[in-house]
Image 1 (cartoon, rainbow, N blue to C red):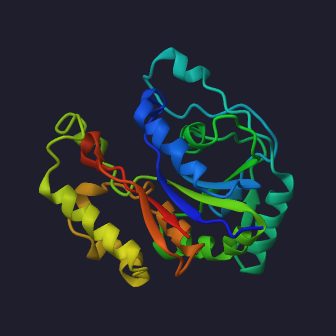
Image 2: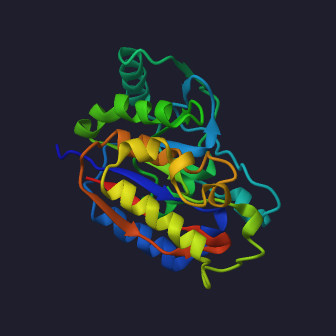
Length: 257
């Protein structure tokens, strides 16, 4: 069985499901990867302490967004459950002396099914979601480290978020055009730190990254990248998707391995 990479995906809103070029890019990316046995996702949209394992069977999705067109609340992604993976995740976290809980009635949120509808639209691979235990960079990185053995067991580990995420800027920068210099500087800093596996800088990004206050008024969209890199220390880094979207948000996605 091939060692799976780990990924960080800039997932966007449900509107991305109507962006045909983005869907095509996501699908093309998936075709370059070994086919996963199972998929494990840490999404920006679920923070719960301790690290919590979501539903292990197929249950309704969570439509965790407001004011969108009605048809977006009918999106389906009925992927198989992953009970064995849930047990394995719990065992790995426990072995790493990290507390763990279960939330069997929590369905997948849009940080999971939006990117997976692009990559694996047939929903035929078991999917499990676990929560971000906090916004503490070192803690999220440690979760990734604990889960790293899964990569040798056919599991695709995915952190889903955005390296920059400021919804207040959507009106100021409504498209991916005319990107302000501060956004480019922040994106370049992230790219360099990630490519060089500069873990100390990434764990201290709140102090070291330029313009972090403007790029990230909150931090839930950034920290999933720390889980992804924690699961694949020293692996080769590529950036399958780059560029900018509305709000001067970087669309940079990352493959580790």
